[in-house]
Structures are given as C-alpha cells and as structure tokens.
Length: 109
Image (cartoon, rainbow, N blue to C red):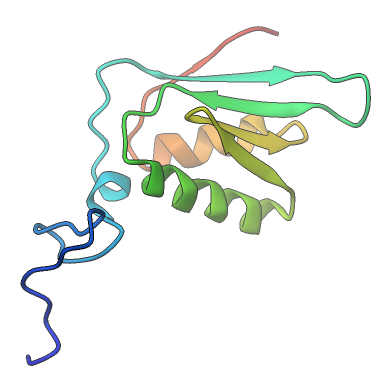
C-alpha cells in the first residue's frame, strides 16, 4: 500500500495503529481504578452527568464524548480531563462503558 503511513512528525501519531490521533486508547481500556460516574444538579437546567477517572489520551476522551453527544443528542465538554454531559444520562453512559470493558462506579445519589 503506498498510502500507508510509516512515520510522522505529528505528536499524536501512534506507531501501533498508525493513526493520528491514536485509536488504541479507546479500543483497549487499561484502567487500574473504576471510572466514577456522578450527577451534579445545577441552579439552571437539568444538571449534568460527570464522568471522571479515565486514563487515556485527551484525543480519546474527545472521541468518546463526541460519540456520547451524537448518540444522546445533547451537549457536553471535556474540562480538566473530566467528561461532562448535559442532562441525567447515567444509565446510558454506564451501560455503554460496561459494554466497552470498563469498570464503572456510581458516586452520589
């Protein structure tokens, strides 16, 4: 294949999967602790679902959040390494993360 990338100066390039950004961290979870899933109610709106404790590349977190937002039709952001989704979507997020092989622990009510 002439289009196969062998080397790149891009800092996000992964020599294992040969992609930029790396997709290895999304496909193969390597967590020493469970992911903490909680809900934070706000004064305005319906609150937000907080997902913390991921040990993956920031690009992998963005990709995971993008898939959740697209599937749920809601907004969200990655702030300081913590994924935030608008609304109460703990059940959906927990089922999706368990299907991907992550251990999930619910924190709070």
